[in-house]
Length: 393
Image (cartoon, rainbow, N blue to C red; front, side, top):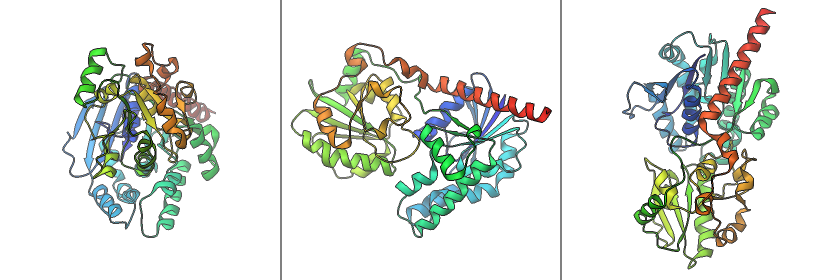
């Protein structure tokens, strides 16, 4: 198959959950199929116009509307998704950048205007969340917020209706797509979020020692890591950790390591149990330094890629019931606790597979991006076959 995909972000390097999903699935698809992805990026991006990474050909086109939408959202005037109108106006140029002859055209929500009039036999809306729910729960402060929510619901509903197939992350998201938009179950597919099996692994003893020394972690200190991008549910979860959970653990030699752009909300905090690192090019050494990975989120959509990443790094996982959504086979290997019980869960100093000297959970292998991308290719092939049968009939 020739698969074309269009993204409203630069998918490589993949710096947050959405781009990790996009690139991970593309890489998995590229093992057996030809994959060409268009990334519509802000003007400031200095990456190559075209490159091939892990078998995926990435074509980048700069767009002023992305930067403008970002600024408008920061000013509280309009949400980021308003860039979709500009993308839709440029859809002819974007299709030309992708080229002709694709068997599959898959887009995220902001580029879903490309599906209108597309010649590909299979048109796919690749959903990362139920975007309407995500907006209602975690959107920034905006003028006329309710009106913008209505516009987003209309946009998402149109994407579901115009697509031959909508791919979602969880069974819960599939149910919401049916509830909100009347999506046909036969035109929905669930492909979970996963982890990068080419990068993430458990540490050797020497690697763990070096990683802990680099962070100044002492012998006997227990380190719990929270990895997250700067968006509402992660900020809410981090606030709970720094205001409620870790103050209750002060003096118990349990440290909190925070990684990612979510650390922006920690400006000025200097608690002795807190280590804030920010965004890093390599996550693995920080996972190697930690004992447990935390996911105390209580809102949001899709599922959180940090859960399989923690497990792949050999960590124990402490998560809320909401935090392990979409990962039912992995949940038995996690400490699942309500947010109010996190301090007690950490006092128990749960040990991950690396500390126990055992392999990560066997079910984790099903969540490798290579495996998930291969499964998505099978879904595409099955839908194309059914379309051919209908055409012949």
